[in-house]
Image 1 (cartoon, helix red, strand yellow):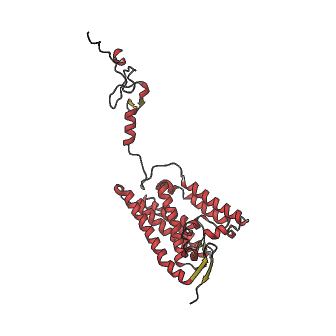
Image 2 (image 1 turned 90 degrees about the vertical axis):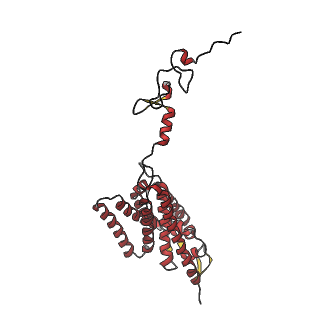
Image 3 (image 1 turned 30 degrees about the horizontal axis):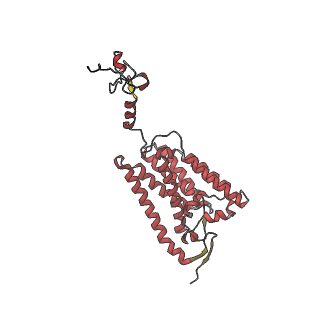
Length: 309
């Protein structure tokens, strides 16, 4: 018996090559990149001719997406800033409800349990250095800080969500360090001012790094100077927290914007780690000094006594 004749592919049977993804479809078209035959369903309009979906997918993997000088993907609107504003507003609402007074929310037990109170921090409640940054003394305090945060939202677009979040949170800690090291032990601190000043310091660095005109630079310097003047003139405002946040924010942003592109992530991580080490050392040095002066049997409620020697 003779062998059965060879059965050609459906595409070749029609005198045309078959689509590489659909062998049952004859086609006269081909990809301009790999030149393989492809049916209309498998072709995508390209800048020159048509490319198959495989070449388009491969091209998307190899194309370098544009980034900012900090290494962040380009974005058109902030994402983290509205979230931070929402968190601060929620914390204010909760403490106001617990205090049963929207204008004196600091009278709630939760507020005192989370505020930056040096004796309680020295007694082991270290989380207060962060949670205090989401508390505010009254509605006006909240509104002023959140409006300032919104005006600084473009810094998130420059740094990206993660880097912006790092600058914000570490600046909160930097502000707490300022008061922890130098303020009177009975001072209770709260507010996002440390973070706001950290972002102002970051904005100053960004204006210099991006080589903006002198007018823009003087505007930022003027805003910082004016706010520091208010901090000095009004006793209720913590100048130390503002200075701490300002310095930390400027250092972190400088590390992110001036890091060499070839090893950007490594350098940025090293700067953040170095700043955190300095802050931890500052707390470690100051804590024994506070514990020598104050004893807190109930650090959550702030019940502390001065040590008499």
